[in-house]
Image 1 (cartoon, one colour):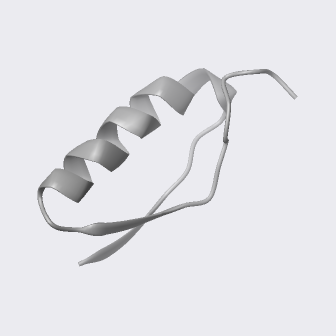
Image 2 (image 1 turned 90 degrees about the horizontal axis):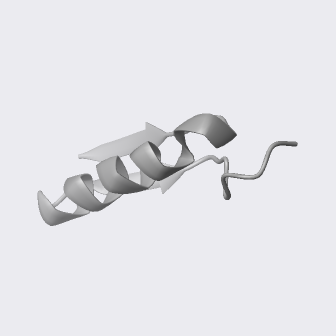
Length: 40
């Protein structure tokens, strides 16, 4: 399954955990950001 994920900087670490979980389950996750935990 293809899944889109995104977050703001405050949710970055949680999003990365979810992305890894989805990968381990065999899903393709497209990441639309944020790409760091630094505030904009």
